[in-house]
Image (cartoon, rainbow, N blue to C red; front, side, top):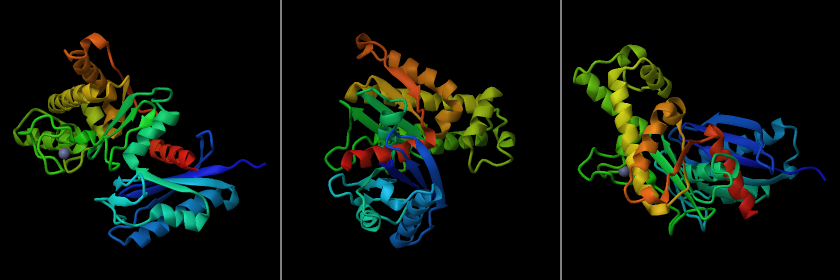
Length: 321
Ligand SMILES: [Zn+2]
Protein backbone atom coordinates (compact mmCIF):
# COMPACT_ATOMS: atom_id res chain seq x y z
CA UNK A 1 0.00 0.00 0.00
CA UNK A 2 1.22 3.47 -0.84
CA UNK A 3 2.50 5.53 2.08
CA UNK A 4 0.25 8.24 3.44
CA UNK A 5 1.24 11.78 4.34
CA UNK A 6 0.27 14.71 6.53
CA UNK A 7 0.30 18.43 5.89
CA UNK A 8 1.26 20.85 8.66
CA UNK A 9 0.40 24.53 8.22
CA UNK A 10 2.05 27.41 10.07
CA UNK A 11 -0.24 30.44 9.75
CA UNK A 12 1.75 33.55 10.65
CA UNK A 13 1.05 37.27 10.57
CA UNK A 14 3.25 37.73 7.49
CA UNK A 15 3.48 34.31 5.89
CA UNK A 16 1.67 31.03 5.62
CA UNK A 17 3.85 27.92 5.29
CA UNK A 18 2.62 24.42 4.53
CA UNK A 19 4.91 21.42 4.92
CA UNK A 20 4.34 17.93 3.53
CA UNK A 21 5.32 15.54 6.30
CA UNK A 22 5.79 11.78 6.49
CA UNK A 23 4.22 9.83 9.38
CA UNK A 24 7.72 9.67 10.91
CA UNK A 25 8.10 13.44 10.86
CA UNK A 26 10.30 14.11 7.85
CA UNK A 27 9.40 17.26 5.94
CA UNK A 28 9.53 16.40 2.25
CA UNK A 29 8.00 19.50 0.67
CA UNK A 30 7.25 23.16 1.39
CA UNK A 31 4.81 25.72 0.08
CA UNK A 32 5.05 29.32 1.29
CA UNK A 33 2.77 32.29 0.64
CA UNK A 34 2.25 35.80 2.01
CA UNK A 35 -0.59 36.24 4.49
CA UNK A 36 -3.21 38.52 2.91
CA UNK A 37 -2.99 41.85 4.71
CA UNK A 38 -6.06 43.25 6.51
CA UNK A 39 -8.40 41.06 4.50
CA UNK A 40 -11.28 38.84 5.52
CA UNK A 41 -11.00 35.36 7.03
CA UNK A 42 -12.20 33.99 3.69
CA UNK A 43 -9.16 35.49 1.92
CA UNK A 44 -6.80 33.95 4.49
CA UNK A 45 -8.62 30.63 4.15
CA UNK A 46 -8.18 30.69 0.37
CA UNK A 47 -4.41 31.04 0.76
CA UNK A 48 -4.32 28.20 3.31
CA UNK A 49 -6.32 25.87 1.05
CA UNK A 50 -4.13 26.72 -1.95
CA UNK A 51 -0.94 26.10 0.06
CA UNK A 52 -2.20 22.69 1.21
CA UNK A 53 -3.28 21.72 -2.30
CA UNK A 54 -0.02 22.92 -3.89
CA UNK A 55 2.32 21.25 -1.41
CA UNK A 56 0.60 17.93 -2.18
CA UNK A 57 0.49 18.33 -5.96
CA UNK A 58 4.05 19.74 -6.21
CA UNK A 59 5.28 16.49 -4.65
CA UNK A 60 3.38 14.56 -7.34
CA UNK A 61 1.08 12.99 -4.75
CA UNK A 62 -2.60 12.20 -5.17
CA UNK A 63 -4.86 13.98 -2.61
CA UNK A 64 -6.21 10.60 -1.47
CA UNK A 65 -2.82 9.84 0.07
CA UNK A 66 -3.35 12.69 2.54
CA UNK A 67 -4.08 11.36 6.00
CA UNK A 68 -4.59 14.49 8.07
CA UNK A 69 -3.93 18.23 8.33
CA UNK A 70 -2.64 20.19 11.32
CA UNK A 71 -2.73 23.98 11.59
CA UNK A 72 -0.91 26.32 13.95
CA UNK A 73 -2.32 29.83 14.33
CA UNK A 74 -1.07 32.87 16.29
CA UNK A 75 -3.99 33.08 18.69
CA UNK A 76 -6.04 31.49 21.40
CA UNK A 77 -7.64 28.25 20.25
CA UNK A 78 -10.41 26.41 22.09
CA UNK A 79 -8.94 22.90 22.35
CA UNK A 80 -12.36 21.25 22.49
CA UNK A 81 -14.10 22.95 19.58
CA UNK A 82 -11.05 23.92 17.52
CA UNK A 83 -12.43 27.43 17.26
CA UNK A 84 -10.01 30.36 17.14
CA UNK A 85 -11.17 32.57 20.02
CA UNK A 86 -8.69 35.44 19.73
CA UNK A 87 -6.11 36.22 17.04
CA UNK A 88 -4.70 39.74 17.42
CA UNK A 89 -2.71 39.91 14.18
CA UNK A 90 -4.85 38.05 11.69
CA UNK A 91 -8.62 38.19 10.92
CA UNK A 92 -9.51 34.55 11.61
CA UNK A 93 -11.19 34.68 15.04
CA UNK A 94 -14.43 32.70 15.04
CA UNK A 95 -13.74 31.16 11.63
CA UNK A 96 -14.00 27.35 11.53
CA UNK A 97 -10.63 26.76 9.81
CA UNK A 98 -10.26 23.10 10.77
CA UNK A 99 -13.86 22.20 9.83
CA UNK A 100 -13.44 23.97 6.49
CA UNK A 101 -10.22 22.04 5.73
CA UNK A 102 -11.93 18.77 6.66
CA UNK A 103 -14.76 19.59 4.28
CA UNK A 104 -12.42 20.52 1.43
CA UNK A 105 -9.91 17.68 1.76
CA UNK A 106 -12.01 14.94 3.38
CA UNK A 107 -9.47 14.17 6.12
CA UNK A 108 -9.33 15.02 9.84
CA UNK A 109 -7.89 18.46 10.62
CA UNK A 110 -6.60 19.66 14.00
CA UNK A 111 -5.80 23.21 15.05
CA UNK A 112 -3.78 24.73 17.89
CA UNK A 113 -1.84 27.76 19.06
CA UNK A 114 1.36 28.11 17.04
CA UNK A 115 3.77 28.42 19.97
CA UNK A 116 2.19 25.48 21.78
CA UNK A 117 2.45 23.43 18.60
CA UNK A 118 6.09 24.50 18.22
CA UNK A 119 6.71 22.98 21.64
CA UNK A 120 4.81 19.84 20.62
CA UNK A 121 7.05 19.70 17.54
CA UNK A 122 10.16 19.91 19.73
CA UNK A 123 8.66 17.11 21.83
CA UNK A 124 8.11 14.87 18.80
CA UNK A 125 11.19 15.52 16.67
CA UNK A 126 13.36 18.15 18.33
CA UNK A 127 15.21 19.04 21.52
CA UNK A 128 12.42 17.75 23.78
CA UNK A 129 12.34 14.29 22.23
CA UNK A 130 12.06 11.65 24.93
CA UNK A 131 11.73 14.28 27.69
CA UNK A 132 8.44 14.05 29.62
CA UNK A 133 8.77 17.41 31.37
CA UNK A 134 10.15 20.41 29.56
CA UNK A 135 9.39 24.05 28.90
CA UNK A 136 9.89 25.90 25.62
CA UNK A 137 10.48 29.66 25.58
CA UNK A 138 10.77 31.64 22.36
CA UNK A 139 11.74 35.31 22.57
CA UNK A 140 10.77 37.13 19.37
CA UNK A 141 8.49 40.12 18.81
CA UNK A 142 6.89 38.85 22.02
CA UNK A 143 7.93 35.95 24.23
CA UNK A 144 6.02 32.74 23.47
CA UNK A 145 6.05 29.63 25.59
CA UNK A 146 4.74 26.13 25.98
CA UNK A 147 4.87 23.42 28.62
CA UNK A 148 5.06 19.66 28.23
CA UNK A 149 4.19 18.05 31.57
CA UNK A 150 4.07 14.31 32.12
CA UNK A 151 4.56 13.83 28.38
CA UNK A 152 1.56 15.96 27.44
CA UNK A 153 1.20 19.50 26.16
CA UNK A 154 -0.38 21.62 28.87
CA UNK A 155 -3.45 23.44 27.52
CA UNK A 156 -5.34 24.64 30.60
CA UNK A 157 -9.09 25.12 31.02
CA UNK A 158 -9.37 27.41 27.98
CA UNK A 159 -6.43 26.30 25.90
CA UNK A 160 -4.63 29.43 27.07
CA UNK A 161 -2.04 27.86 29.38
CA UNK A 162 1.68 28.61 29.19
CA UNK A 163 1.58 32.31 28.31
CA UNK A 164 5.05 32.35 29.83
CA UNK A 165 5.95 35.72 28.32
CA UNK A 166 3.46 37.31 30.69
CA UNK A 167 4.94 36.00 33.92
CA UNK A 168 5.28 39.25 35.89
CA UNK A 169 8.79 39.91 37.15
CA UNK A 170 8.15 43.42 38.43
CA UNK A 171 4.66 45.00 38.68
CA UNK A 172 6.33 48.42 38.51
CA UNK A 173 8.41 47.47 35.47
CA UNK A 174 8.13 48.61 31.83
CA UNK A 175 4.80 48.40 30.04
CA UNK A 176 4.11 45.14 28.22
CA UNK A 177 2.17 44.69 24.97
CA UNK A 178 -0.55 42.87 26.96
CA UNK A 179 -1.34 45.98 29.00
CA UNK A 180 0.33 44.87 32.24
CA UNK A 181 3.72 45.99 33.53
CA UNK A 182 6.99 44.15 34.05
CA UNK A 183 6.14 40.91 32.20
CA UNK A 184 9.05 38.73 31.05
CA UNK A 185 8.16 39.85 27.51
CA UNK A 186 8.70 43.49 28.48
CA UNK A 187 12.36 42.64 29.25
CA UNK A 188 13.42 39.75 27.05
CA UNK A 189 11.59 40.14 23.72
CA UNK A 190 13.38 41.58 20.71
CA UNK A 191 10.96 44.51 21.00
CA UNK A 192 12.19 45.19 24.56
CA UNK A 193 15.84 44.75 23.54
CA UNK A 194 15.37 47.27 20.72
CA UNK A 195 13.64 49.70 23.10
CA UNK A 196 16.53 49.51 25.58
CA UNK A 197 19.16 49.92 22.86
CA UNK A 198 17.37 52.98 21.46
CA UNK A 199 17.18 54.46 24.98
CA UNK A 200 20.90 53.82 25.46
CA UNK A 201 21.75 55.53 22.17
CA UNK A 202 19.57 58.49 23.12
CA UNK A 203 21.33 58.73 26.49
CA UNK A 204 24.70 58.88 24.71
CA UNK A 205 26.04 55.46 25.74
CA UNK A 206 29.12 54.28 23.85
CA UNK A 207 28.06 52.08 20.92
CA UNK A 208 28.49 51.38 17.21
CA UNK A 209 25.04 49.87 16.84
CA UNK A 210 23.69 52.63 14.57
CA UNK A 211 26.48 52.04 12.04
CA UNK A 212 26.30 48.24 12.40
CA UNK A 213 22.56 48.38 11.74
CA UNK A 214 22.98 50.41 8.54
CA UNK A 215 22.26 53.89 9.91
CA UNK A 216 18.90 53.49 11.67
CA UNK A 217 17.44 51.76 14.70
CA UNK A 218 13.84 51.24 13.62
CA UNK A 219 14.37 47.48 13.58
CA UNK A 220 17.47 45.69 14.77
CA UNK A 221 17.97 42.24 13.26
CA UNK A 222 19.11 39.41 15.52
CA UNK A 223 22.24 38.84 13.42
CA UNK A 224 23.18 42.52 13.88
CA UNK A 225 22.90 42.00 17.64
CA UNK A 226 25.20 38.99 17.29
CA UNK A 227 27.72 41.04 15.29
CA UNK A 228 27.64 43.80 17.92
CA UNK A 229 28.33 41.19 20.61
CA UNK A 230 31.34 39.93 18.65
CA UNK A 231 32.58 43.54 18.41
CA UNK A 232 32.14 43.78 22.21
CA UNK A 233 29.84 46.74 21.75
CA UNK A 234 29.33 48.04 25.31
CA UNK A 235 25.67 49.11 24.96
CA UNK A 236 24.47 46.00 23.12
CA UNK A 237 26.37 43.74 25.52
CA UNK A 238 24.83 45.49 28.54
CA UNK A 239 21.28 45.35 27.14
CA UNK A 240 21.52 41.70 26.07
CA UNK A 241 23.04 40.71 29.41
CA UNK A 242 20.13 42.39 31.23
CA UNK A 243 17.60 40.68 28.92
CA UNK A 244 19.28 37.29 29.48
CA UNK A 245 19.28 37.81 33.25
CA UNK A 246 15.55 38.60 33.19
CA UNK A 247 14.96 35.57 31.00
CA UNK A 248 16.86 33.54 33.60
CA UNK A 249 14.74 35.05 36.40
CA UNK A 250 11.62 34.09 34.47
CA UNK A 251 12.95 30.54 34.05
CA UNK A 252 13.50 30.30 37.82
CA UNK A 253 9.81 31.14 38.51
CA UNK A 254 8.61 28.89 35.70
CA UNK A 255 10.77 26.07 37.10
CA UNK A 256 9.07 26.51 40.47
CA UNK A 257 5.69 25.99 38.74
CA UNK A 258 6.44 23.01 36.50
CA UNK A 259 9.69 21.41 37.71
CA UNK A 260 10.89 20.72 34.16
CA UNK A 261 13.93 18.62 33.38
CA UNK A 262 14.83 20.92 30.52
CA UNK A 263 14.29 24.40 29.09
CA UNK A 264 14.30 24.61 25.29
CA UNK A 265 15.03 28.16 24.12
CA UNK A 266 14.39 29.23 20.54
CA UNK A 267 13.55 32.09 18.23
CA UNK A 268 15.70 34.50 16.24
CA UNK A 269 17.48 36.18 19.17
CA UNK A 270 18.45 32.82 20.67
CA UNK A 271 19.54 31.43 17.28
CA UNK A 272 21.84 34.42 16.76
CA UNK A 273 22.98 35.18 20.32
CA UNK A 274 22.40 31.90 22.19
CA UNK A 275 26.10 31.38 22.98
CA UNK A 276 25.95 34.59 25.01
CA UNK A 277 22.44 34.21 26.47
CA UNK A 278 22.26 30.51 27.48
CA UNK A 279 25.16 30.53 29.99
CA UNK A 280 23.58 33.54 31.74
CA UNK A 281 20.19 31.76 31.96
CA UNK A 282 21.93 28.63 33.31
CA UNK A 283 23.74 30.67 35.97
CA UNK A 284 20.45 32.27 37.10
CA UNK A 285 18.82 28.85 37.38
CA UNK A 286 21.81 27.43 39.27
CA UNK A 287 21.66 30.29 41.79
CA UNK A 288 18.03 29.56 42.73
CA UNK A 289 18.07 28.84 46.48
CA UNK A 290 14.77 26.91 46.50
CA UNK A 291 15.60 24.25 43.91
CA UNK A 292 19.34 24.16 44.49
CA UNK A 293 19.09 20.80 46.24
CA UNK A 294 17.16 19.20 43.35
CA UNK A 295 20.20 19.76 41.15
CA UNK A 296 20.75 21.59 37.89
CA UNK A 297 18.08 22.08 35.23
CA UNK A 298 19.21 21.67 31.64
CA UNK A 299 18.96 24.52 29.14
CA UNK A 300 19.30 23.87 25.43
CA UNK A 301 18.48 25.46 22.09
CA UNK A 302 15.50 24.58 19.94
CA UNK A 303 16.64 22.13 17.28
CA UNK A 304 13.80 22.61 14.81
CA UNK A 305 13.79 26.39 14.28
CA UNK A 306 11.19 27.31 11.65
CA UNK A 307 10.11 23.67 11.20
CA UNK A 308 8.78 23.35 14.77
CA UNK A 309 5.21 24.61 14.22
CA UNK A 310 4.60 22.55 11.09
CA UNK A 311 5.87 19.38 12.80
CA UNK A 312 3.85 20.12 15.96
CA UNK A 313 0.73 20.66 13.86
CA UNK A 314 1.27 17.26 12.29
CA UNK A 315 1.90 15.72 15.72
CA UNK A 316 -1.50 17.08 16.80
CA UNK A 317 -3.16 15.78 13.62
CA UNK A 318 -1.67 12.33 14.26
CA UNK A 319 -3.14 12.29 17.78
CA UNK A 320 -6.57 13.28 16.50
CA UNK A 321 -6.92 10.98 13.56
ZN1 LIG B 1 2.48 40.98 29.36
